[in-house]
Length: 114
Image 1: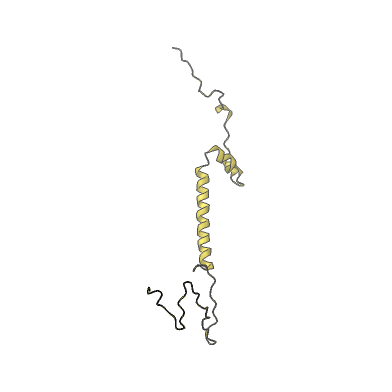
Image 2: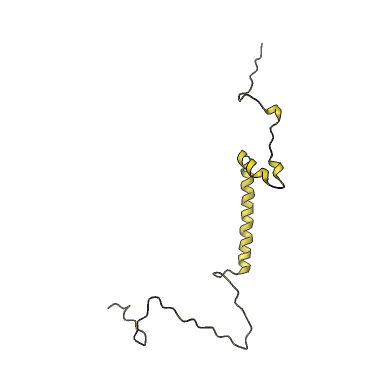
């Protein structure tokens, strides 16, 4: 027999594999202060979660502004996203003046006579 099977409780039954310990309430003195445990998720309370949330949102906004500025010269991004922003959309409108509008893809070549 292995040593695991030799572990026996006082009443003769072995220790179960997944036993659940009974939930005892902690003692609360009637003379002590009236305290309440702060709600938390794995040790992170509401104040700390708010701090993490504000920091993450700040990094997200800075990242989004950087991405829009970086890709603002791409025509599809400029027309579909940047020009539709409420207050600064007009900044991204790039009109080509008529003097720069050339019908030929190659520039005109002038001959100089000597």
